[in-house]
Length: 399
Ligand SMILES: Cc1ncc(COP(=O)(O)O)c(C=O)c1O
Image (cartoon, rainbow, N blue to C red):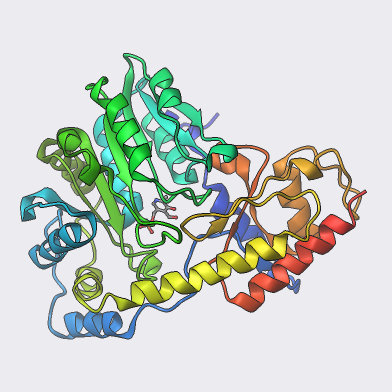
């Protein structure tokens, strides 16, 4: 019997990191593993961002920052929300955190108590499952069908809302499905939420700059009347290839931001001043790189969808955004791999692909939707092509 808190017993490590660790262990043992397990850009952090970090360190920006973020970065984020989301916010409406992940932690911990229901359209980012468990919330899953492009159906959302619903976690472009939001979907969701004024909303728009087909739309811009209960968050990890700098930001109603700052100030004395200076350079610097990088990820998306088309039994919808492919593996279930493993579910598929094809993926079960696997496409073209070849060979050997 462990004497650790209940919250430790009910929280699991992220399956994505667990899979990446297994891939790393196999690699260290001499196997030529390709890891498509983690959603991390392989592209470098831009040079001007790194230069700004050097300058900040050398210029003495080395003291404790304000918990809510430096005024310089909050001003840059304010400009960014105006530019990309069309939102008019002030310095006091911005919170800086250690990655989008901490922003979500702050927002959920500020709000959710045991028994509160958190509505989570699935598939969803594995991090949501973790934080809701940690907070003691009750997840209420609303499956988003592949046949509907993995978009959230407003009627299904309405049916999931109860008097105990406290929070809705939205993420478009979506990790893992790549689904994006169109204006109609956002309007329909907003209409449902207007009838449920007790439900707060987090719009996790971390993949906002990775929409391949159509445009990005922010819920906050489509439904400004939800402003008093809507957090919009983003960060520099995915857009500017800055995962290691740990920097995310949010805007939303002041009461919620204040509560989030209290959570954050309890856990940390704020975000590295060096990272904050770097993020100012990313947000205020040249933005052409976003379109250039989007074109690269789009090419890789096409490469993977075409590459996986040769794998009989695998059905890969075309992701509209983010940098993942999320193929259905139903056609493989009930079959046996060359190594003799019976594929009963997507966990078996991911295990067998790692052990036998030496490709690390993450099972859909980690994202609240079984029957799929997720592949990160944020990797060099040649590596992705080789991974697809291995997966095709794996499928050809199924009996
Ligand atoms: C949907 C989603 N939200 C938030 C995050 C957190 O990103 P970060 O903490 O690096 O800003 C991720 C990272 O994988 C993600 O996929």
